Length: 294
Image (tube, rainbow, N blue to C red; front, top):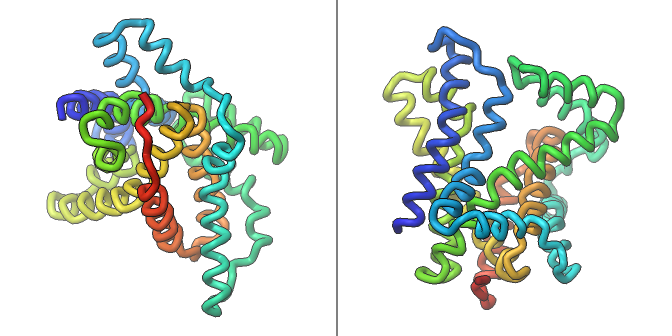
């Protein structure tokens, strides 16, 4: 458990160093303003933790090897389909189930407003020191500019900011001792508890003690139910591609982009059905040979 503990404490500490002050600033609990860009920096806690621990324990050559796997693109085409296509396929499956049981389907025309909704979502990150507001002005020029920013942020803020830590450092440390399935679940617990971003802390800091005690277990429990099957699928992708961080970054980006578009366009979309689908996929891949990538 020592590798998990070291990584978890460092990743959490680096991220909380950004998220907690920002949340305190938004709540008016500190006498200074923290720009919203700081919350984006906080997302890099897992990647920075992986960099620091790899450097301290193995040296710069190991750091180059670790982050070099972000460029490992020579894998079978089917793995790209498995990484990028999982979440969109599950959304289509949920829609098919809804149609089969006679539930009204959401209006597909609403998906067309994704650009305006993403622009508004980005503009809501305030106050800005210039980067976020500049991206907002850039996206006002058209849909392709918005798509460029949307895709770039999905890859960097979520994929590159997290995956060198979860799958690049922590998973390979745990798999030899615990096996792929148990290692995946241990990563999932760490991953879920890390997902206490600035929004989480704004709720906690604005609540009294009993309100916070009610909120925190439910929040973390829901995240664990979501990321546990995802972690198993990520392990399957990572091991199957010989340790490609590029493929798990693309999986991360595809998931975030798909859920963002669907949830904003269709507020009543049954995301619980998506989670059920993820658990079914996780059971399916865990039944295969999760060969450990060394």
